[in-house]
Image: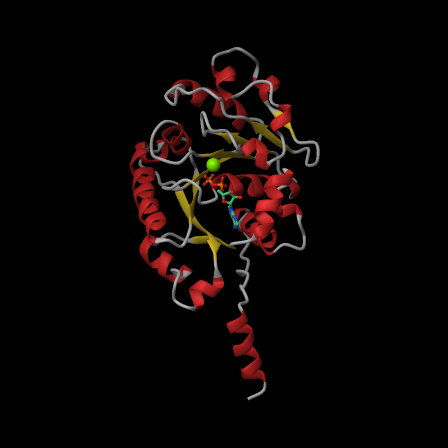
Amino acid sequence: MAEVITITSGKGGVGKSTATANIAVGLALSGQKVVAIDFDIGLRNLDMILGLENRIVYDVVDVMEGKCKLSQALIQDKKTPSLYFLPASQSKDKTILDKAKVKALIEELKADFDYILLDSPAGIEGGFEHAIFWADRALIVVTPEVSSVRDSDRVIGIIDAKSDKAAHGQKVQKHLIINRIKPELVESGQMLSSQDVLKILAIPLIGLVPEDEKVVSATNCGEPVIYDDKSISGECYKRIVRRIAGEEVEFVEFKTQGSILKTFKRLFK
Ligand SMILES: Nc1ncnc2c1ncn2[C@@H]1O[C@H](COP(=O)(O)OP(=O)(O)O)[C@@H](O)[C@H]1O
Ligand SMILES: [Mg+2]
């Protein structure tokens, strides 16, 4: 029976789809059977990050409307064959998803997969409501900015109020990913530190990911950065995947010029 993990945030552009792609690949590389579903109706881009955009024939709405079978719409990744992908519809109608049909789809997938990852859109309507409703676990992605943290706080409240689990008196497990950290700015006091963010949101941390240009080049190549063994963000995503599987793993320390100098001075004191 699959675990449903929803990747969400308050704001757009904070790295949800990037996180979904990397975690999906990472879980699949660890031997799990994974399906990633893009709930960002009208604005698909998870397909591009996964490098699967040229293979799309049917999408999630086609499945729900009975235009094709689920097996016809699922795209199997060639590089990591235990990873499957279900694309978002290009429909302009953001209310096109139907609760009972989404439920039927997720139930069908649950029987066949270990993990179902739902990439939620920005905002708190349409695809977002469907993506959070079925979550067993929510990964909330924030950037260290006041606006992002504030919007996420709202989203956490909505998950607690409006998920299927909440309707049954249960709790959705919630974890925080802080993305696009710029260590130099944190050190100079110009960016919120991860401690600052954690104090405000008070949910357990599952990942820290720095700002890394390799994320951008990986997206352009359609090969998530987790495949790049030399990238620091790839290493951060590998650790997130291990934590999802229940392992306790140390957080990567981000070295800045200043912190290297401090260590150097300490060594030669
Ligand atoms: N750690 C990172 N370092 C640098 N760029 C990043 C990082 N994470 C995401 N990005 C970039 O930020 C932009 C938005 O990411 P995306 O995953 O599409 O966000 P969302 O799904 O939340 O809208 C993309 O251009 C992506 O490449
Ligand atoms: Mg997105």
